[in-house]
Length: 191
Image 1 (cartoon, helix red, strand yellow):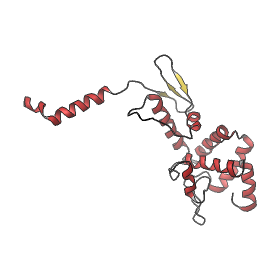
Image 2 (image 1 turned 180 degrees about the vertical axis):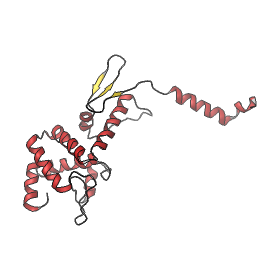
Image 3 (image 1 turned 90 degrees about the horizontal axis):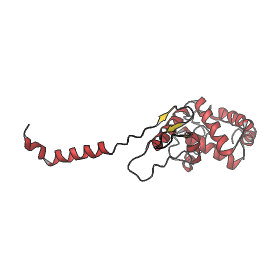
Image 4 (image 1 turned 60 degrees about the vertical axis):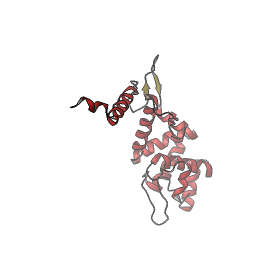
């Protein structure tokens, strides 16, 4: 290889980019157990963050700010949010996540959760892909029209958390509690 090839502008630019990329890598890391909390080491002490409450408090939106990079804490929250979405893609996982959000966001206790389970089991069996071809109702809460869920997020087609949050919000605004919504459903076949 000729010595002059190292002076070509393209090679110099790529080398500079590689060194700047390598130099910008953070050595901060996060340890997770993915069941209850995320531990994020700090320069002085390690702190523990409950990802579900942090995500619920902000409607599941993780703000990374305008920075070009994210620290380990932000990445741990994104990872926890992704795991929560994946968990909610199964009926049992959706039920678990739905109960947690209903309890934390609306302070609904066991009686209301039983009514919620009955209501959404009748509507969709907690299946985020549920679609009623006759009426057009879609999702876990059977929103009609489905694009109503855009008030929470536009990813309602693929994100069961968006569907759950919308359904819980709808019940709270329209009926106050899941038991009131279930009573309406028993009378009319819809809520």
